[in-house]
Image (cartoon, rainbow, N blue to C red; front, side, top):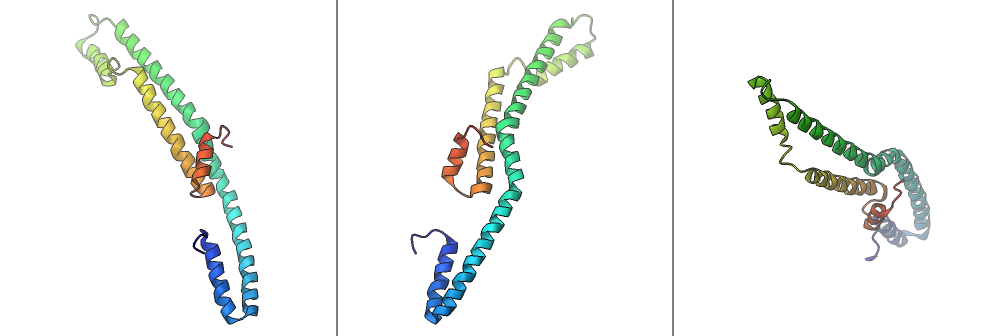
Length: 163
């Protein structure tokens, strides 16, 4: 009994040992009822897994498809905004603008601090974020589906087809 890790099996075995002390007929009836109860529990677990499948499949698709897609779009928009602001600051002559207009564009450039932030750093930050997101969502999804099974978690991280 020390090497059995299932709480259900331990409880069934305790009932079996206590029932033997009373009578064999009581033990046989209780074993049949326990077996029926375990079958019902298994059916309930299967129904719950079916109900949670929609949630887990959404989490898997988010970590495998949507998160990298959104990160790519974010990086493309960042590059576009950088190019637009840099071209606006280069093309606008400062002599013809009033003091307030030129200070607005200078303020925009300074608030983004585009000259100081290299795009490689932003890509690195987004990449780290995506890797963390994939690990967290995979761990959460695996916890819902398989419980605390580290082997299944490692396999689902390695699996190229998450569906």
